[in-house]
Amino acid sequence: MAAKLLLLFAVCRLIAIVGLTLNPTDLFRVGLDGHLNTDQDDIKSASTDFGKMTRSEPLAVLHPASAADISNLLKLAYESPRGFPVSARGHGHSINGQSQTQNGVVVQMSRSKTNPSVPVVPVVSENMMYVDVWGGELWIDVLKSTLKYGLAPKSWTDYLYLSVGGTLSNAGISGQAFNHGPQISNVHEMDVVTGRGDVVTCSLDHNPELFHSVLGGLGQFGIITRARIALEPSPQMIRWIRVLYSNFSAFTHDQEYLISLHDQPHSQKFDYIEGFVIVDEGLINNWRSSSFSPNNPVKISSLGAGTGGNVLYCLEITKNYHVGENPKTIDQEVEALLKKLNYIPASMFTTDLPYVDFLDRVHTAELKLRSKGLWEVPHPWLNLFVPKSRIADFDKGVFKGILGNKTSGPILIYPMNKKKWDERSSVVTPNEDVFYLVALLRSALDNGEETLTLKHLSDENRKILNFCKESKIEAKQYLPHYTTQKEWMDHYGDKWPQIYRRKMEFDPRYILATGQRIFDPSF
Ligand code: FAD
Image 1 (spheres, rainbow, N blue to C red):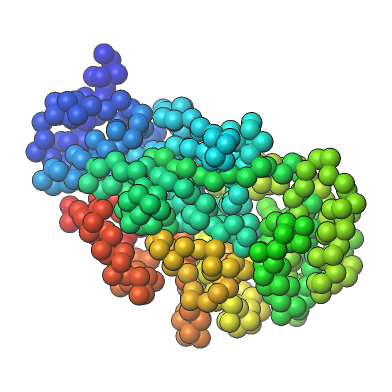
Image 2 (cartoon, protein in one colour):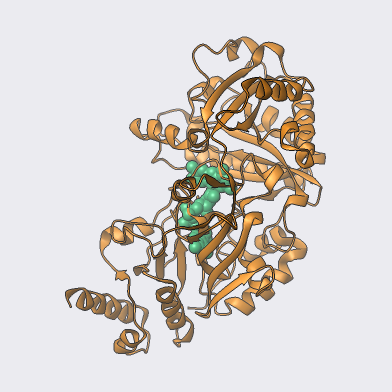
């Protein structure tokens, strides 16, 4: 009873503020099994994100107990004369306020103090090799549940404390994408609540337009409440190898060669291919470098990184295997692949790790950064998809040009095969068979060094975007951030009419994910 009264209070407050003409008892008739909160702790956490650069306060936060709760809220927003915005928030790991909303309702999809158990636990089908998960489930919890059956998803992000709905709204990429495609290429089916409040099951065969719209759809077309994710037998161990290059074209040549092996049998290719750029010795101390042991045979400084404009490139690859496999076979397979590469001979670092520890590697680094107070800082990240034909120009202009020798965080660079991406999804990628992710994952610090300030790093991001524009490098932002519709139209290019049509079909009142700033609601 007390809970019902609290809920009634919250709803009345929301309705009073939004100025809806609804009678609160109507909402009770519709029914909400979860909690609609207006307390300050909830509002505060839904007002911020990992980027720590943008803040918007919602009026209330819904902790749903079911897809029906979300449907009821969205129906109310859609049908009431004035309407109000609603944004799903997975784990709030966006950079620029994408999961925030001003004067609306945030639907907190992942577990929280108020809602410790999400509506549905992951359900694994061993025979069919898939798992059904709640849209707010974190990937780390998806992994834990599938490992009980010796299975694991095929395609990952580098960090697992992100929600399924959050990464599927973007693409979800990591070193497996060259082979399996992004996470959005590994989904069989979803339940989605549209901006009209309809709960719809969709797949390639069933409501395909909604299926393709939502994947990479930046939360614009519906809230994912269930996703069916493809699984494979989980490897138990990985061999993790890093080698260095001083020559950019040798580095990209080798990366492109390795991803071209995607159709080969498992014994003749790596399972994960990434890379990063080293423009200063800062890399030694950052969160991606924890596996460079002190016994690493090469002192990076001895190779000249950061001196006289020298830049080094690190290729990062892994090979999966099962305990009990003949170690000699793994050695031979790895050796045969490495023989074809042109890295600096003395620069190899290699280690064997349990698969799970490798997948969860960034969390280990997160804990270290947290202990030093370096996690909860502003993150002016810039992620770009750069076409293969222009990656050398990008290297000259950005890594060896604009960046100088201070980066304030890791710079990832790795190529992917476009054929592993479904063109019907809502994501935009460059128009070439191979394109690179370049991720500048920077942290702004206020420690007196001008080059590490938020202003300096944000200005540098703008310079990089201007450089691409002026040099006609047709790069596309990943996890895009724009503030005007004109910029969004340029971003989508030929895809814009389709995006607009999809919006009119599934969220015609522009209720959903207003934090992306693509469509401006009139309320
Ligand atoms: P949120 O920030 O909560 O939401 C992001 C967007 O998705 C919002 O517009 C929101 O409204 C929408 N949304 C959230 N849930 C749903 C849902 N259920 N249905 C529909 N829309 C929804 N990305 C990669 O691809 N590869 C990486 O390796 C990678 N590494 C990262 C490492 C770190 C440390 C961080 C902070 C981010 C990383 N990302 C990576 C980016 C990440 O995938 C996106 O920022 C993602 O959106 C974060 O998920 P989230 O659950 O926090 O989403």
